[in-house]
Length: 165
Image 1: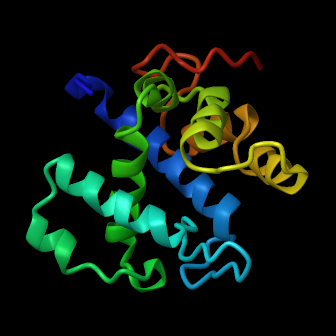
Image 2 (image 1 turned 180 degrees about the vertical axis):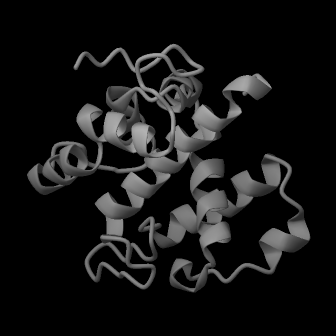
């Protein structure tokens, strides 16, 4: 994404926040989670057909095929690294995702929600999903987490979140 080195810590913190929030929304942080109805599995709740797609997107993004081929096909058996790589490869490989992912990397909570709804979750209008999304991704949480990480949300490397105290 061409992130300047002086902005890398902020980028990493925001992307970690985003992926961690999605883990919470999807599985309540349970890597063994399984939805009997949809067959979605793992920490990010990949469905069987989306596992194949995510693994191909990992290859397309330059992840060594030997690494991808050695991954289990059941997301409940993935390591944290494998799950995160599949999640990010899937998110960044979709048409139109760059606009939202760049804003998410800057700490924009609304862009994180929109990226989640457009490129990961399949039904944005489920009331439970909307409630969980608002619980795990909100601007006040972003400010608190950035302060905890030592990033000032008002004057951070990317110009802050624009959150007023």
